[in-house]
Amino acid sequence: MESGVQRPDLPAPPLPRFEHPLRATGIPIRSEQGFRLPDWLSASAGPAAARAGQINLQRLRLLAPLVATINALHVLLFALRWHAASGVVAAWALDLVEAHGVMGLVMIGSGLAAHRQLGRPGAAEPSRLPLAVAVLGLVFSVVLVAIDQQVTTGISAFLVGCLIVSLVFYLPPVSALALAGVAFVLFLLVLGDGHGSPEQLLSNRVNGLSACAMGCALALLQWRHFTIITRQQAELERANEALMAKQAELERLARTDGLTGLLNRVAFEESAGRELVRARREGNDTALLIVDLDHFKRINDSRGHAAGDAVLRHVCELFVARLRRSDLVGRLGGEEFVILLPATAAAAARRIAENLREALEATPTPWKGGFIAQTTSIGIAAAPAGSIGSFELLCVEADQMLYRAKQRGRNRVEMEPDPLRA
Image (tube, rainbow, N blue to C red; front, side):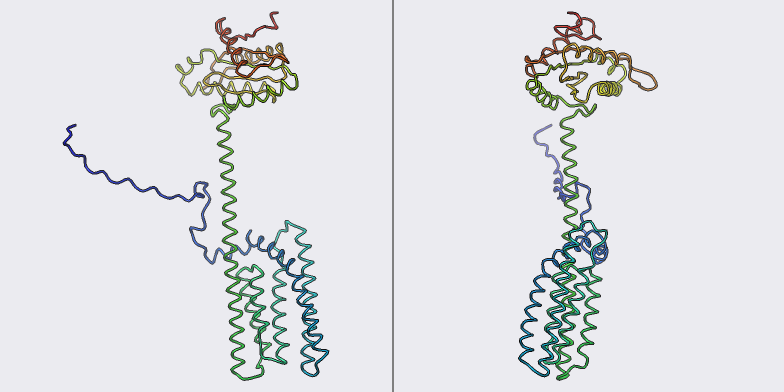
């Protein structure tokens, strides 16, 4: 190509697209879809509702003694006021003593009930106790407003009650809306025509409506935030489980042969090293076998690599079926396998090797309606107790015996010294 020829401008490569880290796990990412009202309604009866019920019970158990203590202080203060007052003020103070006394007892009982329910985890449905306490709390605030109407037009108790209930408990949208509606109706019934100026009555009604609306809005915002966090946590947990499963699979693939499922060379050397250390510590005999399939290349050349793979899998299944669970079997590569026999003397190792050789010779590999005959040569390195060397030394000796087996005609077992020929 001449140097003066100019190449046409190539289009710029596309920018890499950002991928959410959870998308690789196949888990749907709800945060990308937004959070709509139907999701809130579905969360009212799902895992989010169960989790909210547990949190509500925990909060109730913690706050019930505090609220009961505050009720007791109110009882004490208004009892002193009742003792010193007379007429309407005395009646007002006595009514407050009775109301706070009853509410204090209710909170003590609710706290004990919440404690008992938390001690029985695994309930099929969320507890209704927190919702019942929320209803009682709003009713109590309305009762306080009714009592206060004897001496004042203030409705601060109702305002505080609406805010506390909406902040303390996680309430599903339907429950929050129903509570707000019922509380406002009771509030209007208690106010009635009221006393004082019409302007003051109108202001109280508007303030009561505002309190219900603000409480309901806070409850909805809390529920929305809670359900989003709960679902994101569930997504992260599922993603973590998926990633852990993938990691475990990768670790398994890194340690096993992809075709046969046996230990690969690296994993086999690690496991064999630990077994040899234990054999030295416990004083056990050990034997190492290196197995090589005879003329395996001919199978790949004449029948194809798929046939060769079938033979390798067949050999793997045959060996695993005839060896002990304590024996280690690995694939060194190609058509070579390695077997470690813990707590096995030389004579026993020779018998095991002969059994494997004979079994393979007598069990050809099924292939496309026919069979593929296969023989094997095996070299053995026997290490008596007290003279166990390293894995590398055992491999060298077993490999030498394998070479001798092939030199002497293949389809045979060799070891030195040979206990069957001594």
